[in-house]
Length: 586
Image (cartoon, rainbow, N blue to C red; front, top):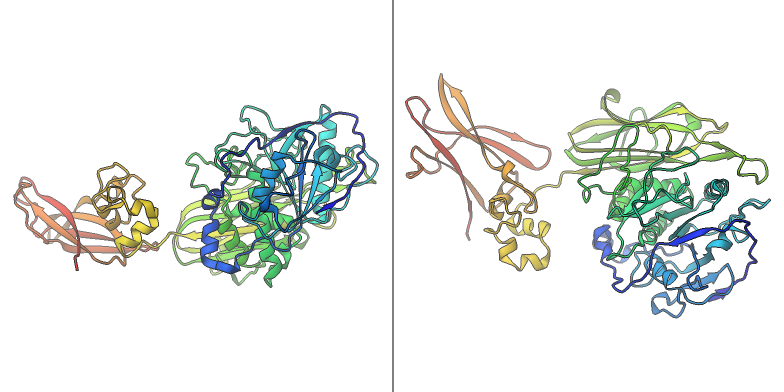
């Protein structure tokens, strides 16, 4: 373990600091399931990236005059931890943050071996940012900085300077800074450090963090950028996101064609935001001029989605070539007033997400960051229908006038050709601004062919062992629709499925009106028989009388059938049709 001492500089106004983690009586790695890590592990096996070769930094506040993780913790075996702010004892806060960031057991990035640790006040001062000093910040050699703390100066001018210095350094040195949010929803956004443009601000999945937008340097920018689990109630999502970023960076380092993701943090930021999922938050909303949610940002971290986007490859805009359904591009506003990326989607998409991120730059003389002129380009992002590489109707727009993030999100996007277009509305720089566009099209999952496969998709192994929960006659949603029928109608046992029940109607043939029944089923279902029965009194039933009228094949692996009765309604007082679903037995 290395120890290196840097002198501190005196900052004339004290900084008030809040820690984002207090204790860890139940620390575990269960959060990995929520953020999609097991799916990567299942697909890649031993080839899963672990953050190997990624040097990182961690900025920690004092706890009992100490800021360092416990170097004797077995989870840090094999790590080279260097303390850059002087000698320190053990901080429980730093230990837990380290466990989730780079620990051998609890982290998604156990391959991280080289870690630099800063103490907050020293990092603000001579150790790194040099706030109020007459020098520019120290050069950062790490690829990620993690900030599991929040704070503020009594003087807002110093907060502005600190955020500007960090934004400047992120662009200059090419590292990702992951910053936490204060853990009280009723508080306004703290001045340090999530007011930054170039940082990745992370909140909690339960929404218990400050909000209300930024207060200075363009007030009203939505933060957080995304949210992550608190790890069984622990308030420490930042190191979970930092570990995910390390995993992605290793993938970029080892994979040809991903070079532009290695030292351009806006790429990793955009890939993480595009991969975030909204499904845990029914209340998630966006607007054209405020495209991410004011509480949950782009959604919950999903490292599986983000890894798929990254490995989908970089795709440059082209007037006559389709990009992959999931991918990214590092572009530059100097290349023109707009850039168009064409997509061809041959299946209905359950969700489609695109994220655009770019950095704030500075017209800077010397190290006077308080009076430096911020240079923030204004970009907008649009999705169009297209046909033959010609743009058609606009589908959605993201036109936030103050933020340096634009975000699109659509559900049930139909089969077809589309185009993403970046429009440069204003660019105050002379040489252009690098932007990162990332997108992710997730097809509607093909319904399972067998009941056993359907059970595996929707229930845990423990639930599958409980027939009262997952068996064919069980009704876990409590909507009166048993599991076998939910499966047969391409439903989800954890949702309300009464809207999937067959719908009655009529059809006219040779001037005679016949009752009909319409239902939707998985297209390739096995071992299930569908039967239309009819009755005039609900007592005696004529079985299997349905005559096909029409069928519609959808792009999501389902097919809709309409069957009619054999008997017209003429002269009848009443007529009933029912759908009977039978599980075939060997």
